[in-house]
Length: 430
Ligand SMILES: C[S@@+](CC[C@H](N)C(=O)[O-])C[C@H]1O[C@@H](n2cnc3c(N)ncnc32)[C@H](O)[C@@H]1O
Image 1: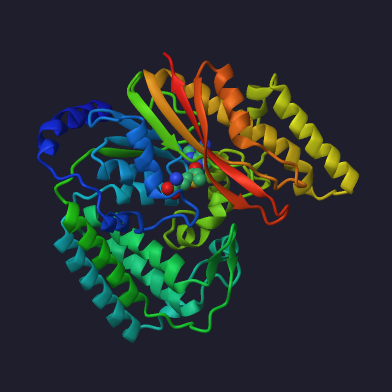
Image 2 (image 1 turned 30 degrees about the horizontal axis):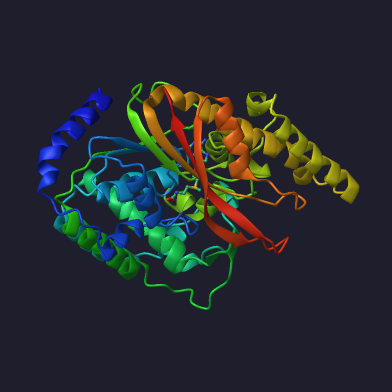
């Protein structure tokens, strides 16, 4: 039912948008900045491939690992209907909110002003650091010292007041603004390739003021684009198992950046805001979330995992995993995580093979796909040529390989070598 509605929206769009200026302006970057992963690919890359794939306004672009929604926002700015899939709840909410430009900006500001005023009154009357705290289980989930007590209590108070706001249609924008300031303005987090803690001298951040400003900035963005009603839908789902959530032969193009096999844990990157917003409350919920993610690091590998069966005949991956294990033994490395390196590599490529296999029936014949992936050397410095290996997997599954475009290189800290980040371009012949 929902899908049919989506299709009708797409059809109804064309006439309306022909008269709409669709020039992409510099300040459109603002939508991306509502909340985004530090290492997301840049919006212009999506724009370039929308042009290369010659996507029309009636065609659906899918991002099966949409993260914080760069592809979806860029698709909407270019009047291309899109669908995103994301398994991490925080990223899912971010994407979903970032493509919802249909709310009333003035009402959003009014609601935020009311909430921040109420918060300031409550703070005057109550010792909020005693009332608004994380419980023991929640505290164990976040990195030690990642936030000081005062900004934490103020954030929890805001979350509580937002949850009581009667205009529910505004609440995701209000929460996303809170997530953004928690991470980038008031926490002690810093982002290198991984997330870490750097204690700040300021412990008394003006949380209500910062949040209100962030809401105002979101409202200002919405006001500039409120006429754009290009449909965009985000689904909370594991992209290795997308059966029945898309319509068959409906997708004209895919543009995405899946995780790479590199020990990056996306649940750690989003942990603090996920806990403060109440999206993860204990170890069991964290494990459920991790279970739906591609196995790209040793922190989410479980006994029952079996994605390696999807690449069991791929000699290149088996040899690569064997080489990593041989190196481990030679180097005398015996930690639990190190013992899992070879297995992660097999599970990662197996998961990608499962995803690419499942996707086929949802693609239109001639559909174009772009997968942005990077080479890695995180496992005892053994080079993993992610793009080139995925190219082999895709070919085996019947995809036509169009090109493996160099997007950029990155200096690997361990090897001091330049690593390729590439766009694997495929076509589904049908
Ligand atoms: C490299 S990030 C994508 C970044 C994205 N381009 C953006 O604009 O933020 C990869 C994303 O894939 C998600 N992910 C990992 N495994 C997944 C799965 N099996 N299904 C759906 N999403 C998954 C992660 O949570 C993460 O948000």
